Image (cartoon, rainbow over all chains, first blue to last red; front, side, top):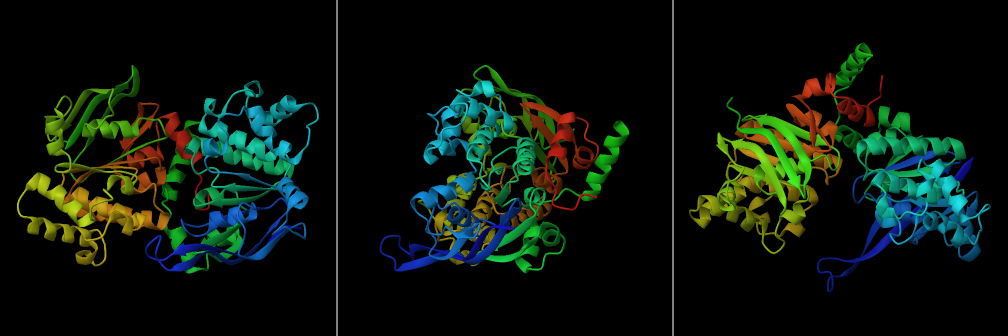
Length: 277
Length: 260
């Protein structure tokens, strides 16, 4: 069942060629007529290098910027230019987790206030009170609920990202957009957050749009992948097919460029580990 | 022992806290040593200690010998003569390492003249050659351009050209490809490997990325919380890691290839 459908989304930015002030007015097409679908409970990864338009796509779907043309709909309802109650309704269905947890969490707000913020925006009062509500979400994302009155600076990067995830879950969304949500984290912490995203996906039936430049991370999480280059989706398909048999030359080049640990070394390491055990 | 760089029991202390404890390793000519670790592991502090570039308030003890000479305890002036000449360094962010007000050609020339002196015209010819060597197209023209007129990958190539202009015996690269896109990263890694094979420069390569380290390094130091937990050939470290932390790191990274 299609949850989100985007059709011919395009985003132009006004720029000036040459001199920033006196150059000729021009437009830069960051996203060029892209179309994709996300089914309920499905994870679509959008991958690409810097300047590919993947983050602009995330912003468009999150309604953080307006498309120049094209449209997108959730559950069949067009929300491209939704206002007021319709927009609030959309924001209950779609939440975002950003790359840098510290710059996306207000440093002067306690975790309790941060996690309740989406409810405040929606004008909803949580059952059992704000503190209980925040604490139960903290438990769900693996944080100690006793720390509910602490501030973001008192947490590590991985823990802060868990706060961001808890906040996204507060309104029980159907779709969470993860914009490079694990890119800034150390590998061991990254592995834990990926595991958490997986668990939450099966517990709450969440769909994800997972924006990332790291294809190895994408492979471990996505059902389907869309590859973007220069504003265009050059190829999209099931994760297994796209990684196993990429069709587009850009996808092929991207996959070939990824630094790899020799699979033979991995195999020997696993054998050694088994012997030790 | 005839290591180009020999580090013994290196310890770095900041405000009474040990950020590097008892680190020992060596880099030979033509050899690449990778230092890998997560944030806060002390890998960058190790590199800065070798270069004598530790931040104010940090103290290094132990021994850092380069070409048989002890570097710890040298004056700033003595170290400055070494840096950019026999030992040079490239960092993660080329834009903050290049001066935005000068053309890239001039910056490369100045590096050469500061150490070797001689005629400007000679330095200019070398700078153009160096830019060509690292794959900047139309170097004669491009030397007159400013850092912001280049892409991220090109800027890192320019940094490499500048680092190699005096023919250093040792190049220290601290996360040199971390800010680059993967396709650009692959090109820069290839460039570094080629230049090293041609010049026999020793390379100390610092990265958080185990896959990158596995491709470029001959030997590896794994660091965690200031501690050197593993020091082995790259093959040993990746095939038969001794320390549980190295094993955990290798388990943690997602693989791009199908896991059989």
